[in-house]
Length: 327
Image 1 (tube, helix red, strand yellow):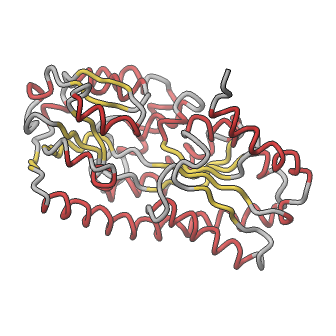
Image 2 (image 1 turned 90 degrees about the vertical axis):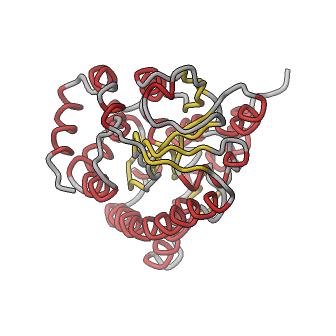
Image 3 (image 1 turned 90 degrees about the horizontal axis):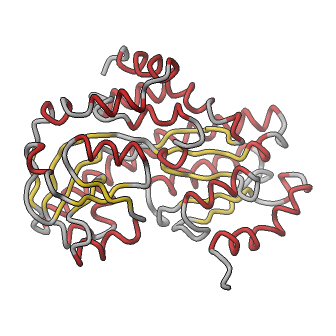
């Protein structure tokens, strides 16, 4: 029997994990990201590492593994919890089964604008969501933008919920995203991101939903040339640290790590905004048909999603706090 990818990763990290008895400064902090080198999140974490090395005179530094070198997020997240990785940039959906509070930023049509989303995540609601991870072996350090997610497909423009009827749409392996697409009338198909291009080519799925940079980077625009601006969610991504690593840092080093992570956020947002604008322009130049969408009819359909995923008092409190923020 061939060993699983997770087993191979765990074996590869076994020696470094065993070496965790060393002082942190004796080895670099290992950082995973599934996005490729040069992607805004990867660049932002690298900037955090640069600041950290500068502030600690090289004592704390990063060894980065972008491009999914260490596997899918579900695998690397588990390894991070157990201390085999020190930091990890993951999609928030990967944490939904770990801390219920992380579901809130993925609620459909929660954020009124990019400015509203950023204000909420920079404020008390964001801090509460980050803090919710600590009992589960993770330290939430920062939120990074992941843009407005919209639908794209191979068949034609989506202007009303009726246009989603019968469309097989790839979604993340997330109960919330499955429920979201079902509520709006589509046929959700959970699938690994790396499988989507071929699935679009062969008709296994008719479309998917994502942001501009991912739509371009994946080259999905080559086979799914209709992009409809539903902007149904603005789920952020998140940078987490292993609590095992965190607890071995001094209070002073913990403060420096938090500060460097905080400073990486505006750096990431500047890169993200430029990348988003450029990606949209490039796919439009390739002939992608882009259409605006009146979102009110879609919003009217997602109340059951809110009822299901924001049913706890804690979730409702966070939602109320976010709604009260101007933007």
